[in-house]
Image 1 (cartoon, rainbow, N blue to C red):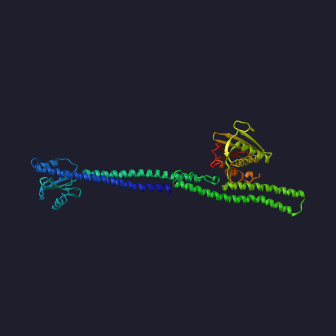
Image 2: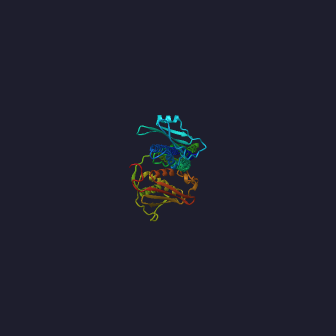
Image 3: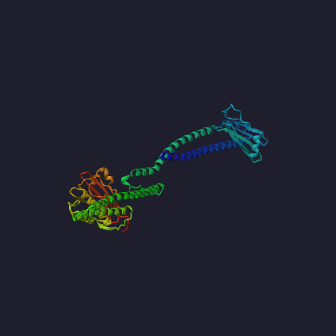
Length: 473
């Protein structure tokens, strides 16, 4: 049984007894009202008949009975009997409108009359008959015992109707409760279903995705926050494990090459030129090892969140120019051109102010631009700026080997290298580091690529000097 069904059943079990209790109270109130109305009518009838009987000048016993017979009521087997202080019968109407002639009439016993004298008022019940016994005092000091009873046929019909209405109302209300329980369960389970859908979207390619916490601070909001904290811990452990594993592998290759070259050099005496060639090869491997070590250190700082940021207002155009100058100094054969929406190639970039850490942002653009040139046969990359009111978009495109669609989700993972890029020197750290730098600046980075056609990286950064950072300057 799923949670939604359990919630619906819980709602039904909780509400149905309350509804049943309410209907039972309604029936009880209706029953008591009818009984009180019936008793009051019988009491008033007994009192009225007694007063009429005492007016002997105007009414005789036979006339009183005639009046009693002609009086229309909804009661059957009605009867009024009046006794004096000595239990002498003064008037007895008999059971008028007797609809149950097969049954013997109610017998008024001396014990009942004595009970009326003691208690002043007695409730009478005899099968379907019910009524009242009264002790009436008169101003002249005399008192009379009056017995008035009947069968409330109309009241009994109305009570049966009340039972039918109560049962029907309960069934209709129960169906409404079932519908409401479904709505209640669906509404209650919706935040959990939303959380499940968000969790299902988290996979190896977007481990940084987190649940959106609710703003009401309830248990589900705390659950989402706890789940996000758990993902943070898992990501940290996984990054540490992956970092150690990949770093060990990447460091092993240049160290092995250096060791092998030294061992070969020591096998036999060699000429000065041969030693210089071996030393140049070792120096090249040491440079690679140095670059790799620096990249690993920078990546470790980001993943461990130990990097210190000095936010300043910088010109994005200056950052790009500096990145290109650094690349061309290192690789004179590379070619980089600039473009804007309204300018031709190699035109000057407009001055655009953003809030950033200049050295980190320069490093990110160096990685992207250098990759564009390195993986293109013509070693050429193009930089395009698209300026919006709140953001600036930097597009870096090349006409290189491209990236397979199946691998695009993995290129920002540390040490990952596309299958067709493994023949070109690299360590797979640059793009991972670049993505972290862009996200640190509250920007976004996306990639579009096709094999043997080229790759385009799209970086979006906020223009507002105060919108891009969560840290103080």
